[in-house]
Length: 117
Image 1 (cartoon, one colour):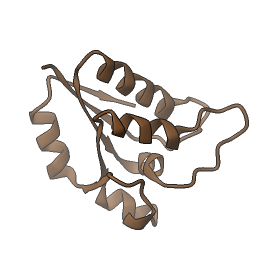
Image 2 (cartoon, one colour):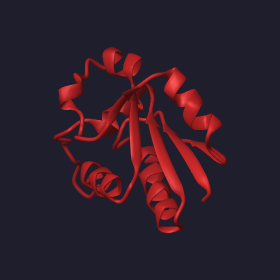
Image 3 (cartoon, one colour):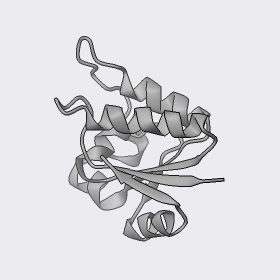
Image 4 (cartoon, one colour):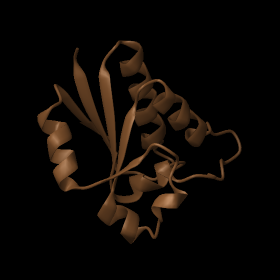
C-alpha cells in the first residue's frame, strides 16, 4: 500500500485555500486506498480546532476533516504550534494527536510521498 504524509501549514479559510486543497487531496488519496497521514504545522493547527466559523460560501473544513478521519485519516498537530497558537488539546477535534518534529520525521521516513500545503 502506498503512503503519503501531508503537511498543512496554512490556517483554514485563507484566500489561497491551501488547507481546503490539502484535505481534498487527502480524501482523494484515501479513495485510492493509500495510507494517508496529516501533520498540522504552524498556523495549520487551526485546521484541527473545533467549532470553526465557516465563511459564507466556504466548505466546512471541520466536517470534512472529521469525515476523513472516520475513513482512516491519521492526524497529528505540532505541539509547539499548538502552544504558539494558544490551542489547548481539548479544543482539537477528537482523534487528533499531539505531535512533534520527531513524529513528523517518523511519518516522513515511513511515507512514499510527502506533500506540503
